[in-house]
Length: 306
Image 1 (cartoon, rainbow, N blue to C red):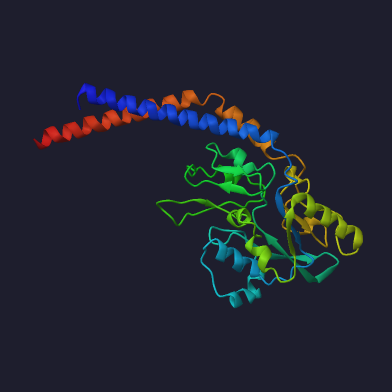
Image 2 (cartoon, rainbow, N blue to C red; image 1 turned 30 degrees about the horizontal axis):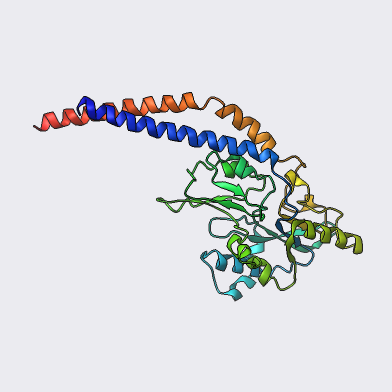
């Protein structure tokens, strides 16, 4: 390789390095901006009333249909044997229904649907250094696979352990989760799971409306509900909020403070990325050195062959 070609490649690499630095710094700035994220009272949300849920799992079926996930016929979701084990959302199932016991009646179980909570101040968006996650004004936390670099920081940051990764896809794996049927909402429709729910355990509306409705139900039927609307304040508030017959400690929903997770993650992230340009430059020099050694080796091989 001649000196001119080498210098050209070096310039190209430094341009790429500069672009990468700008992207990462922009991602960091984006994360910092989440501190000022408003509570989206006018955005959409869903009230999950677990006292109404009958465990039919039709919401799982509808979610699979909307998101073109592998699925079975609707009647296959009548299978209650799945409740013998605790399940989490995966890359093949964005929502699942589990059971939790009634603390006062051990033989009685309630059902609880879980999916992405679409936080008002999402930890996944804060942790993402390239801005692949974004909280939309309509409520959903959206994901841009084109921006994603597969670091999976979002999976670590999420307090609800929701984002999943397509480990089975070796060429173009994505981080996946409940989409809140963002496309349907944009078209004026309700999420697929809400539409199909036969017992009206899921109520769709603005976040302000569903929280007011949740408190109204607690006031009207105090013996039916534990006096707490989960998600109203947890981690700064979520778009999906819950009612339950028992203390939420008995459910799989984690006990969390009102403090948004990004307040913690961003302080750590800013410390890590405060001086991120020098490491980028270092990685660039290392890559150039490796490239130079590789070219020398290839040149030596060519000489030996000639």
